[in-house]
Length: 125
View 1 (cartoon, rainbow, N blue to C red):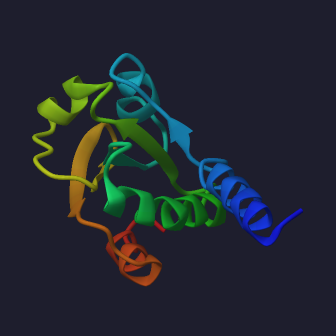
View 2 (tube, rainbow, N blue to C red; view 1 turned 180 degrees about the horizontal axis):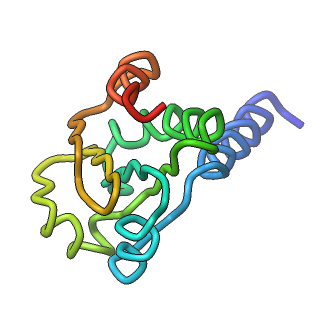
């Protein structure tokens, strides 16, 4: 295996790992997975073409894995599911909205590092 092939393989595995702890939702499953959830849900509104969204994905996956007992992290592609993004007035991405008890309780706009996101989520963690 050449160095570039090895690097490409490592990146591919790494990118696959970043969705392992999160759930993927859509407009149809939003109510059941988010609004009806017994625990808080952080919804990441993102798109495949969004560079900052790709940067925050591994951070969200880490948080999802480390705090799975207290928090669900869900990803919603706004291009494929414009309904929820419209309903919650998502104007730019990445936007993360924390839902608790079926209600949006906090909105986080922009890509942030792990420490900043954990601070924003401290109330539920």
